[in-house]
Length: 127
Image (cartoon, rainbow, N blue to C red):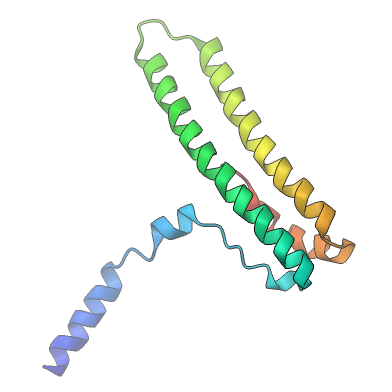
């Protein structure tokens, strides 16, 4: 019986998906390395809540763009200009969300906190 339970545990551990969906869809909002004050923490929580809302809207927008691109690819005539326009619109939207987040954080964080934050800069990129 012990061996059966051990084998079951090992098989379960080997075949678990290791939270791929969670890691893909959730941003680590843990910013303890910045040593935020209580006032900063309250402001940052609001900023992150807004960011997550904008990120959700962006993902929906991205799906719409993807569907349009697929439709354009299936058409008999390939319209490079239209694909390019869609790609630029998607990039512009992602940069707008990133810039809004960074501008908000910049106004709240101290110089040292900003230096500490840049180590995780890429984690906040909107894709």
